[in-house]
Length: 411
Image (tube, helix red, strand yellow):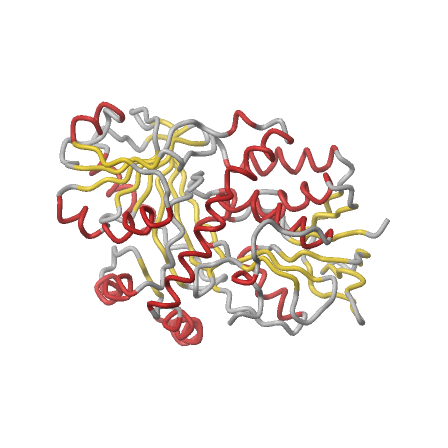
């Protein structure tokens, strides 16, 4: 039987490998690290079905100058990286045209509507249904001005029919007593449920994949053998792994791999930070976001995780953990009793495309090559749906949605 090589063992890669193995294909999963050790290790554990709005919308552009001059702002671009980032930003600007923003909103909404149709069966098949919580997410607002500033987001959700409920102060604290009394209003997103431990989820799915006869190889991919179609994956240590098809889903590193095939993708990394607090001194049921303060807090991985922020500095620059400390300080505004005992800090690379919509597509240049990348902040959210769609593409089944908005050659 011919082998499919899935390159990248984050949550996207392990779910694709599992899906293809379930469909009777012979799959080898390849990564330079163990499954789940990249960005999937430290994501915010949220199934964020309401967060599909493109980052390129004009309201974001309007705030960008203020954010960039604020050292504690939600977006940071390291000055030395600005020249390299310029071509990506030009595409980001192009994606901010009002007509294009509406197209991108629709493309994101189509994926988000499918999330539980694909996620719940996948969790059941992997015997991991208990990994998904029942509680949703609360979006917090200190006053009416903050709520009005986020009204665009709510309006988009209303247009596409995503569930939400506007709450007043007393009701908010009935749901989450640890929240400050300074929060005047909140919006409950009941379908933005959480994963109890996102790293453990990736590991367990990879173990289920192995139990079905899948194979995992650890090594750094440095090239591909191909003529009219792909034939093998070459690793840095000299090994060559035969494969008749490959799926490139290595997150922010997928751009380097696509260039080996002369297929450039405008993929950047949005570096994100988190602090995992194992002795927080409080308990939480829901995840929370505070749009005006640009952070998120999720009860996950046996503690409470504080994360957020966007830093554009490439794949190689050292972490700046001041970003993580700013987020914790803001989280303590929302949760006055939050203690920082037994805390660890982490930085990871989100794969960012300028239009915020992922690539889920066959190659435009090579037979037998497929891409699943650019999921941005929604890798965990989109993982099961991406696996379902990639399973259809690779096996020749008809996908349940039109995949034209997610094609690799749209830029």
